[in-house]
Amino acid sequence: AAPTIELLSGASIPVLGLGTWPLDDEEATTAVEHAVSVGYRLFDTAENYGNEAGVGEGIRRSGIERDQVFITTKFNKQWHGVDGVRKAFEQSAARLGVDYIDLLLVHWPNPEQDRYVDAVKGLAGLREEGLIRAFGVSNFKPAHLERVLDAGLVPEVNQIQLDPRHTRPDSRHFHSKHGIVTESWSPLGKGSDLLQSTAVDQLADKYGMTPAQIVLRWHIQLGLVAIPKSANPLRIKQNINLFGFELTQDEVEFLSALDTGEGDITDSDSFGH
Ligand code: A2P
Image (cartoon, rainbow, N blue to C red; front, side, top):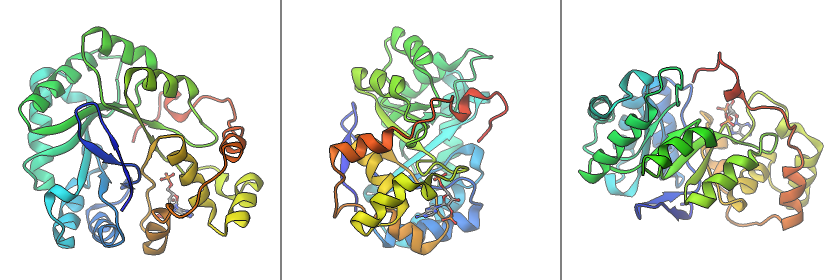
């Protein structure tokens, strides 16, 4: 199993977990059950992925105890609001087949409807009641977080797109300043040829690891939580086998220098997962 990082609430989140977008229920069940058997304890899903039931089923089939796994899910913009968030929780918990959720996230700020501060307020209430262990947000920029912090609320996690080509230094620094853990989605740089780049391949050769293992190691050494998605049993296993080697500080920086300086995908209005 992966080491953990402590969140502001005191809950512990594993530094490496399984992403599940865009798996359907059946694929998610198979992937999650296998992932538990090779040491995964963190599972990431969302209302919007349509596979929460499959993720819950995979966890049950694996036979692992509920308190040994850390389940993250996220809710859609229709629930932004103090009461809406409770409904979102109830529906996700029912689909997952659990009575509490480890980490519940506002999936997108959806600034056009401007109700994300209330959504986070609702989450704080759920945590107080013990229905969720921790709360956070996803795809929030520092400007969105500022408004949440101004309301006296501190999200414990911000899950954002982050990989060596999108290193998001402004977000990372802002988060560390406030004790917010940064979680990387698409940590392998999906949709790019990052895993084929010379820089990554060179390090893979040096350490006798795969390109994906090098990139995931980079996330972990930066203090991030990474949730690579894979439906392939061998790659699922490979992606958590990261704890027997270490990149040098220079190598971490060498990989960070792959940043293109372009905006990330969440800058585009048409993005939607
Ligand atoms: P697959 O499910 O066939 O393994 P990300 O989480 O960064 O979005 O990346 C997910 C993509 O990367 C998926 O297409 C997944 O495909 C692929 N992938 C996951 N693990 C590895 C790996 N170890 N090596 C190469 N590709 C991988």
